[in-house]
Image 1 (cartoon, one colour):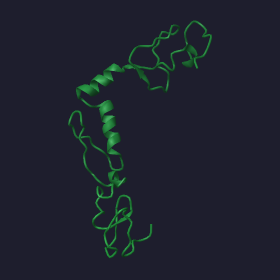
Image 2 (cartoon, one colour; image 1 turned 90 degrees about the vertical axis):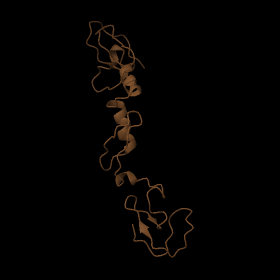
Image 3 (spheres, one colour; image 1 turned 135 degrees about the vertical axis):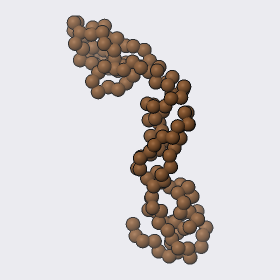
Image 4 (tube, rainbow, N blue to C red; image 1 turned 120 degrees about the vertical axis):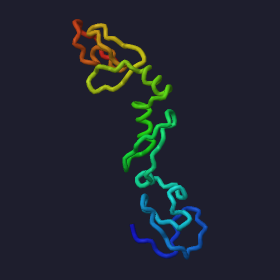
Length: 145
């Protein structure tokens, strides 16, 4: 991006006179006046790359480490799905414990869905014998849609 020019206005709705010394945001690289250079003042969408704050899980109040360049919301969400010790998060994980045995599928179901032929557990999408390359005794007659 070109270097900022004296008097340049880029912040939407900024009423500052054009004699300010323009500043470039180190995260999004847009140009702002001194009133709008703070990440929060211009709603910077790239602030997570530079703003090194440690978010706290809203359920268990534990700090969740975030590496530079990672989005805090995504990391906290993954913490809640995998590591959170709060009652609501653990209850959610315990309900969906029946993992599909089809290679590559990560789906979990609330109830076991056992194949009549190979007697293994699958998700609803892979429950039919042809959908999981069944190794059971019988030959499947049709493939689920």
